[in-house]
Image (cartoon, rainbow, N blue to C red; front, side, top):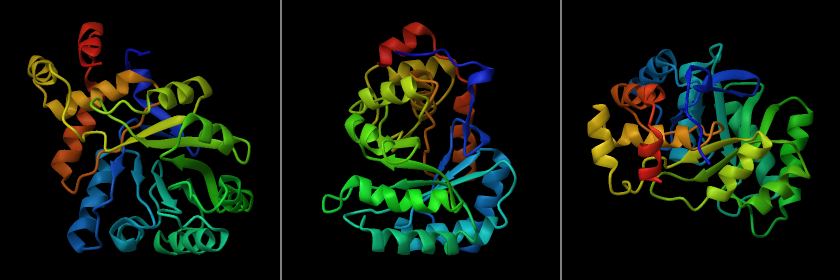
Length: 261
């Protein structure tokens, strides 16, 4: 399944805010004056959604975002995650959510994902904690990460799921069924590592024909793959971020899309 992008399909609504369909990943972000300035420039460039997590850079990623961007600018969604690596118990999740609220210097988190399903804690128990914060108005929308279709369905029986974040790109199609499920059910699909692993034969040729880089074409492929995709390439360079965002303007032909698929 694929859909041809248009001006109207370059945005999605997340947490009630219309954002560009390319966000910013911050797994390497640390809290330095230079990175604070980068974040402010990034907001001006217009990714719309910044993605972080409790564990990124030992918590420094969230702290940097809070220090640089609080109070949060209008039109920006900040998404974070908790419960990584077997830390999805109610006690640990509550502590992580509270820490994220403090680090991000906010009263409300726009989008909060369960970072990983904890093999020692039932999914409904972990999500039940996040649902409590949603019901209390401390979290706007809930997501899940690194999940199967069956796990998304189970999650939706506990709390409305607004977004799914899985490893997915033009070279790694292991979540094809999850992308299709998200599209069918109006759930935003956020590919992480959207540029990892290179690409199929023909990527360089398509890039050359558009006068773009292979990375920009790989992002354009993700945008064409489904209208619910919102990739979050990570960078600490404002120039690279602007290059990533320019993929929103690329329109692949049917032949190019199929050749890369």
